[in-house]
Length: 493
Image (cartoon, rainbow, N blue to C red):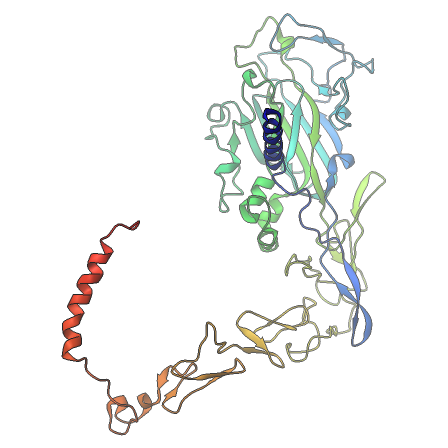
């Protein structure tokens, strides 16, 4: 019996742990098809959709550079001591020996090896001069981030650090987030976490102390920049409402740019010291070491491509929709019949392709529904112009409150929420058939209101409202007293 109870507890605990770990779905939002063949009145034709490449591990395609260039340990060889034990000095770095070298490429190799592989800096031998290192990750391509940026330190996590981004291939930089054991002292900023952000402050640059705690937290090796927690401000805590996020990304350029990069820069400003005074007699205890960097994202193709190729050390989109360029950012030469436009996530789930059209052919025939659209030809965005109350790619569907009847007609009555009043009868949801004494959209108006003398006149056809009887007037105060007493009783009785 005890064994069975233990198994049940273990199963429950495993489920709780998995639920905590799998906080977000592994893949969100597809848009993986750019076009498909469909049958129409004109035969087999193409139906175009917004599309984007699948998310991938973008560290496979980057170039890494360090500043200063000679900051990597091993030239000359050096011995390091453990931060927690100044007398444990058996870690050697030697650039001439593969087993003892720690080059930058080891930040991006396969994890899980034993022993762990990592990049390592020189020690803080020039103290009190700051030990400053810039690690720059460049893609030479615009990238859209889809998951958290994650750094795993083999040494203690730095006490001060800045994560920066560039949108113009490293010409200019903006901070993404500040990290410190004391934000006020290091950057004159109040400490915050991503949980302090709202939809209105999502783009704020914050300083967090969450990933820079002292050596008492030595088992915490990761530093994170939370992408999905920011997505969740629009899409909900488990990213279930992606339509809301896509709508915001579609309409808010600053939000879209916030998650777009060409380069990342990790600025290491102060190594871990174990929350103590720096031991100037043993500076080999202080250094930086990173075992892994994760950057999950996709090529930015402006929703005009569903694949991205890496050729000759360069990423580029395989453009559809008659577009071209590294990001599908312009129309092909013979397809400039209207101005180029990025695709749109809306309407969910296929979006709007906004294809480039051939030169000098005028509006494109789109097989728009003749009853629901103004014309059978596309407008300037490549879609049908719908009449009032109509929606859909071909204007073949009705908005809420409208019914299809050779086009979308406004729903007047439905015998459920929109009932005809005063004995009126709903006819085909389009009108109320009113008794002779009433008029109005829902038979809500006495016809006599528009007649001479109003509803009190002798010719109104409507009897004046009877006065209440004396007995009813005497009963009213008694009824009010009973209702007042009843409201004073406790709710649970």
